[in-house]
Length: 190
Image 1 (spheres, one colour):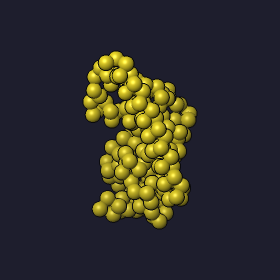
Image 2 (tube, one colour; image 1 turned 90 degrees about the vertical axis):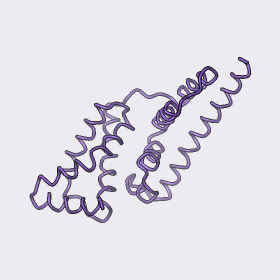
Image 3 (cartoon, rainbow, N blue to C red; image 1 turned 180 degrees about the vertical axis):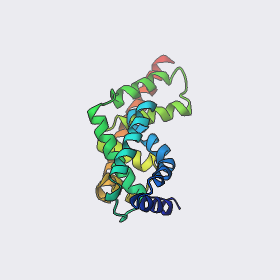
Image 4 (cartoon, one colour; image 1 turned 180 degrees about the horizontal axis):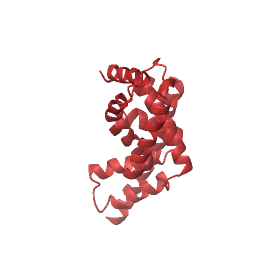
């Protein structure tokens, strides 16, 4: 149903009804802020990035060809803007190893709560190389299917599938080594 509303609003904006863009912003503001937050982990910056994305989308709305869903085009444009923003002003990166070492050191003393585990996974995904990170964010966190993920990333479905597989493998390897280190530490301490 959103896609019908999006198309109607896009047509209205292109026909001169600028107030119709408010509907697009209301409908997509939260998803774009959430996507930006996955990149920068800072709420204020995420809101700023989303606002910049809406300005860019508004200025380039005439480039939307309607050969795919508006949401696919919106996320593709937004993802490119977020990547550019992060290259211009990157957030301090944490290595996956350091995040997992931190978690492993805490496991013997205190079981990580689900929320903490989720945060660790989010931070580990954010530390992946960009192509794998972007694929994982779009596919898992934005819950897009493979076809939509490929379209948003502007790659073939095979490439998107490969990036997802490689991203999962990197995370699995790091998590398994971290679990083994935590188990060894636990044995020594007990």
